[in-house]
Length: 289
Image (tube, rainbow, N blue to C red; front, side):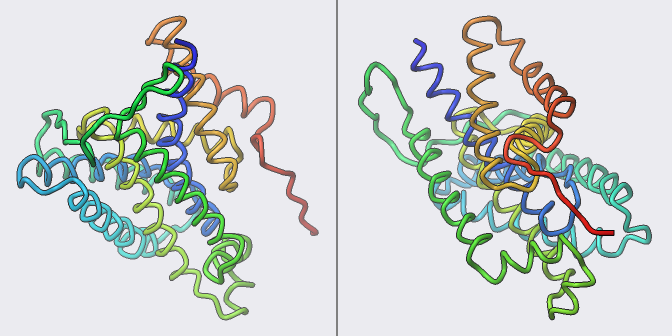
């Protein structure tokens, strides 16, 4: 039982890690906390479920289409709203992302209804139990996708010009401009990537946990908690934070009560902010003045 609880916690932790990456990417490129990140997850799950159930599309086609749609919406959100805001302070933009998230939630309710949808898994069949631990086929898709995404994201930030440009723009917009980098383009790219990450998480988890227009707040809270726990701005920290949060939640639900799951996320967020605000992998920043 303990091994099953641990593996199930890792499974949901992988989804939290994808959402935390959305926060991390935008923060690294813009210094902004995107509070609409949870709605990207919700849209990815709802759109992919609707395409699979109502239109009969195969899950492996519906998921990429939903990811592309949410990616475009996220890019438009930055290009059409945030970059045109009159007051582009972090507080004003953060509040604006909250308002946009509410609008997106209402749009999904109006377009797809309020019913819970249960899309099919990406593939059929069963995985044999390993040491008494059962992993659903959709769970294998989650583990494999997050592993590949982690490698690609590390390559992006560590070795690519785009990753260097995003980090430079997040550190100093003026210096980035002097180096020929467009902070506006970097910002839109970061939001598009965050939308893709969120939609990917939503499409992966929908066959396991259903899809509904209200799930954005839940995933936004868990992803933000994971990002803070690991160290906001650290891709490795996002993975660690997501996995730790998922395992601790499952342990609390398995040995105490399922009602403690959400309290665990909030409790961890408060403790980390009180004890080590930079998170597990966050370091002290030193600036000359």
